[in-house]
Amino acid sequence: MVLAFAVSAFVVGGEIIPAGYRPPVKVDGVVFPVARADWLSVINFTDDWHAPRMRLVGKRWVQSGIHEGTDILAEPGTPIRAMTAGEVENLGWLFYSGWRVGIRGDDGSYYFYAHMTEFAPGLSTGDEVSAGETIGFVGNTGYGTKEGHHDEFIYHLHVGIQEPDGRWINPFPLLEDLYREAVETDR
Image (cartoon, rainbow, N blue to C red; front, side, top):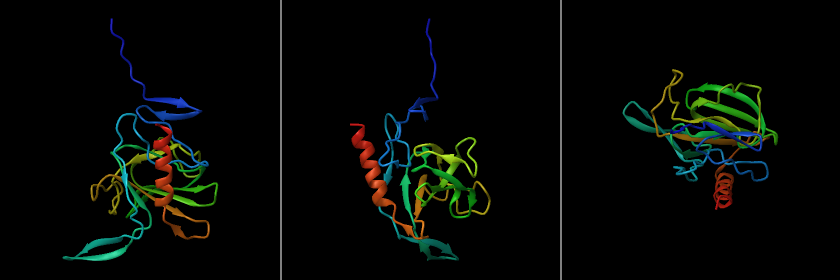
């Protein structure tokens, strides 16, 4: 007789962790926003803060703005985690950002997650989330007026952080520290 079963999630410290992914590592109450797989994680990010953003207008490429965040390349469907505890302030579609979630952290900062393929089941505006809670899944949506438009770029998560005074800050140094700590903790 052969018994076979699959586990779709498990609970660690009261938090539901999708099977195949490592539990989040909290550093002063903050976590890296892309879940790391148990076996092999394809995660890549660089400091692309204020990199030019180009658009094809007619037959010419023109700069249409600057990048106010950090893009984290990851496998399609990888869970996205809330970096910090807070309240879901925005949830829905934006032309450039695609499916996105905005969380007002308990620290007063606004955490912006964009290009999702979908939101976590049941997530709604006004929900309280904890650091490390799954809020959505890595996608490549955006750059389209029709909701769900995708495939204009590679799968990734865009992370933006706006300070309580309204200034957008470069999230790369924080993301780099959080990722390093997560990797070191698992060694």
